[in-house]
Length: 100
Ligand SMILES: [Zn+2]
Image (cartoon, rainbow, N blue to C red; front, top):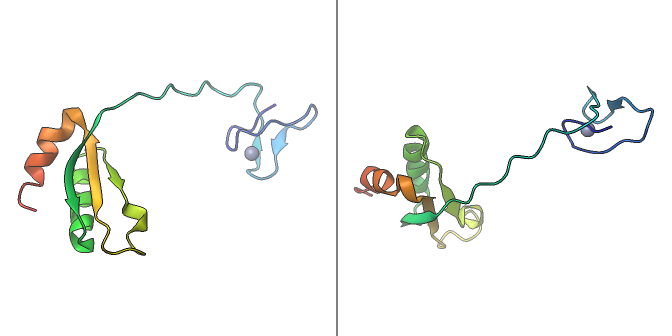
């Protein structure tokens, strides 16, 4: 039996996951296959306000992005964040961010 939330496997006789308080299931649904996406760098920025602005623009247009280096930002303010977007969204993202 498996917990649909934490994916943990439980021994026979147990029917609920105590951590998530949900009923166990016999089988977990198959994990979707990851899709490989080519990413292209659309902009590099080290300004906190602009980084927030870039995210809101991309999210507003539903353009998925990967902000490389974003987590180190608060500690190392001079390390710029690289914004990467899927290749098929590159032109649109570039156009949206052209004034930054
Ligand atoms: Zn669980």
